[in-house]
Length: 183
Image (cartoon, rainbow, N blue to C red):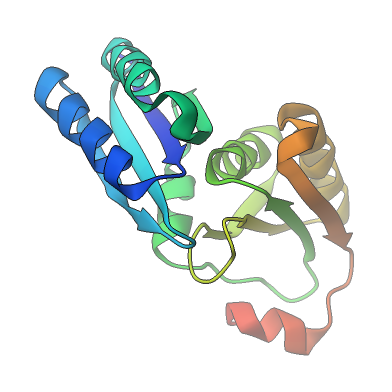
């Protein structure tokens, strides 16, 4: 069975716990995240076989109603997305950087997965919390051409309403790169 990930970002914390509780009780998915975010939001990330995730997401969407800020299902998500959520990567000297800022979490995760599946880039960071006011950030590195291809794909993949910014740093300053522990 294919593995999938379901993402649901809600405006309310209490409704988020209600949704997570019901999904946990009534479906056969596992939780990766079921927790609060800044500024007063709730994130539910579930995983399992594709059919179970689809069923759980349908239930969650019906329960959440007007609280939904972003949602999505990704089948066969790249494992690097989960690694980047847990710890930032490194940028090799002379690599270009692609930086994508989204207005919600699900589009950022979609962008990160899309970049990895489209071009020869390495995911450096996927930041979804930490004083970002509900925004999310995706940073990836590679050759200039590869980063350009990934950025173009993301601009087509992510709903323009959810995409705050996408930029290419063809030759980032070494002190800026040091924030990602340059190798």
